[in-house]
Structures are given as C-alpha cells and as structure tokens.
Length: 227
Image 1 (cartoon, helix red, strand yellow):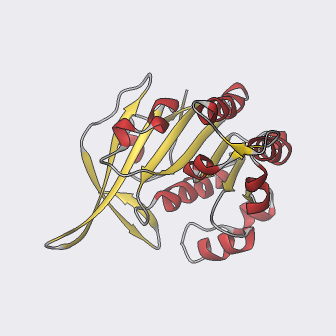
Image 2 (spheres, rainbow, N blue to C red):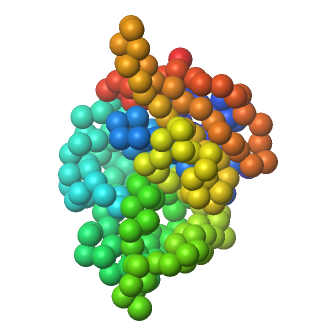
Image 3 (spheres, rainbow, N blue to C red):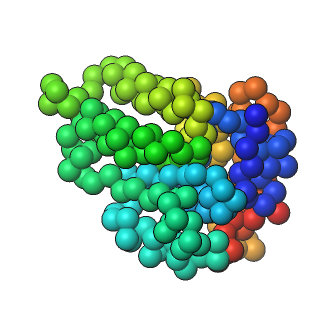
C-alpha cells in the first residue's frame, strides 16, 4: 500500500509515494530541509484526515516547535487543536535516562493514540543514549538492537514511520542507519555559481521502484517543492 508524501513532485519520484507501513530515513546535514520536509508532510496528511505525530529528540519545547512552524504556509492550527497532529518533545532528562525511558515515553504517549504516520526527528540523537537499567553507554550492537525493536513496534501497528538523521551524502552508503530502514531520501545543499542549490536523491526503496538521480528542489514559506 502506498501513502502520499504530500510533497509536490516527491510522489512522482517515489512512483506513488511511501510504502505503508515502512520506515523511511530522511538524511542530510544541518539546514538541508529534513525537518521542513517532515513537518510539511505531516501537516498536509493530518489536514486530510490522517492521524499523525511528530516526536522531537532535539528541537526544544513543544511550544517552540509550533512557534517556529507557524511561519510556514502549510501550518494549520486546527489539526493540532483537533488532535489529528500531536507534537511531542522528549526532554533531555528522559533521553539521559536511556533506552527504556525513551521507549516507555513513545509507547505511552504516541503508540497508545494509534497514529497512522509518525516522524522522529532526529534519530541519530540515540547514538549517545545509555542502557537505562545498567546505567552505562551501549556496547557493540546494543543500539542497533534497541532501534530495530523500536522500529518493529511501529511496523507491527501498521504505522508509516519517518525518521531524520544527521548523515552526509558521502557517508550515507556506509552508515549503520541505512541498513535499518526501508527507504532512504538523501538531501543535499551546496553553493554553486548561481547561488544555493538543493538536491534530493532516493538511495533505496525496498519493494518499490523509484526515479534515480539527483532531483533539484527549493524551500520557501510554502515548504519544499521538487522542480
């Protein structure tokens, strides 16, 4: 089953949209448009009756996230007040307590509400978490096991999960995060002679075709638009 990304031009590149349920990684360095893409997708989806949730692991308070997004044309207060789009900000205190604390928060506050589409921004924050009960940093494959179990919780409930990651285009193919997701969108920006250029590239999608190549896009108050 395909779900629309609600990003102009992206569904065409994905040959119909995201597979649902599945896990999508939106990768890129700071300022490439990862959070913008995710929030734009969530606001449009929830405005069309899709129950959504946004989980921030780094962006500050819920009020700050809403205040920042309010500047953009796709912002819709109604979907927040109606509960169609829930905005969550997991505090640094919860993150500092480790894996079980984070898992418990997501289970109690997000999965219990039965959303259809969820964004976690940014998943690479979890690289620094500890084991809750043993009060030590993760060792070896413990982080990967925790993340895979977390992703499985979403998949078993039929949820489209989109996660962002601070991963450069040069390292995406060797990143351990790439092996744990079904679809990878890599965002890139660079300074060119005619100004700032932005490109989106689909690195992989399991079980679906896509249009390869680096696709130019722009970001404005209207959001992201593929050219």
